[in-house]
Image 1 (cartoon, rainbow over the protein chains, first blue to last red):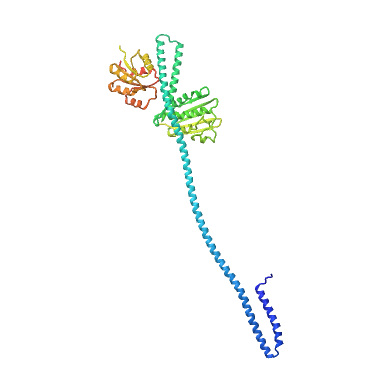
Image 2 (image 1 turned 180 degrees about the horizontal axis):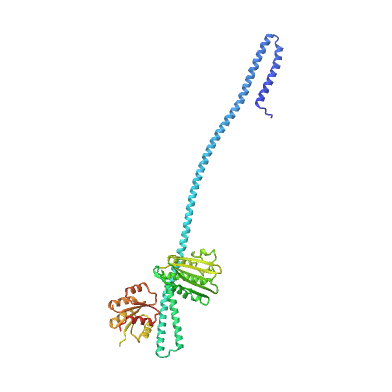
Length: 362
Length: 122
């Protein structure tokens, strides 16, 4: 339906009603009234009547229209107020939510810190555990080895003593009875060489199994290295050339003899195992101020760059299962640290490795 | 001239026989298979100048035997012999002068002879 705006409608109604009233009321008055003065009065009444009726009509129209408008306005106002309240309330809710969120965030970040701390602690604890485990394992191994070697040493030293005594007796017997000749001397000499070598091995073994924990012993580094080479002789001979470049300068090194034997045995075993077929191990000692430098170089397979930082970690090994525990260098590192020295490695794949040891001297 | 008398205590018979065989020309070698026998022998004679004892023996150890013998015969020269390393006990006895030295097995007869010659009275 065509919707006409209020102001047009009311104007149109006024025009229509007014025109109709003028047309029909004049005709009606003309039909019934002839008197001129009465006619004039009637016209006046008619005019008043029209004014009254239109006023009443306009009043009604306007009132109805304005009522609608006011109602709409009031409704609008109410809506606006409500909206404002709503906004205020929502803002308040949002603030609350934000605060909660902030609190939660803070708590989370605190928890995160705690977790990070605990994580670090756990890592430390794990490392500590690994170190302790490796030390325990080693201690146990060395204890059993100590009992074994001490027993073996004693049991072998006695028969060695018989042989040495017998050798001396024979030597005297031959010379007293004038039957000493080149052949007898050669045979006796061989017996003596055998005795000396066995005695050196047993004495070397004894050094390894020393279970003293103190670091106040006089350590003859060169004889410690020699002992290790005696023990490793079967691995090295005919395969690895060992070059010793020992310093002649005097020095006094105090520490733990048994533990230093372990250090050089570990390092020399690694050097020997790194050499696949034939190769060379060079051991160099040098005095420099308050330090003794011991460099052990091999012409073996070397260590890759990614493995180099890990080689002193407990249980790190590149050897096949059962071939190595991954404890050797970890223990070596610990022992060197206990002697207040330092241990460094230089290596190139397929070229070889140099182990640089630094120990304090008096 | 009488040969100087030395006493050797060891539980290993072969060691006893060998020391005697090698040193009998120079010394009058007395042998004892245990510390207890060694003490008895010292009681019964008065010509022993040097005592050598093995360390590890059943019952009384060499060091125990020497300490006991020293109480009665403090003027003699005492030597230990060991198949083990020189232990802390032996080290202590050495530093106190209770023993002259400690031989480690295998020990050459020459070394023993040289050591004895240093202290023996002609």
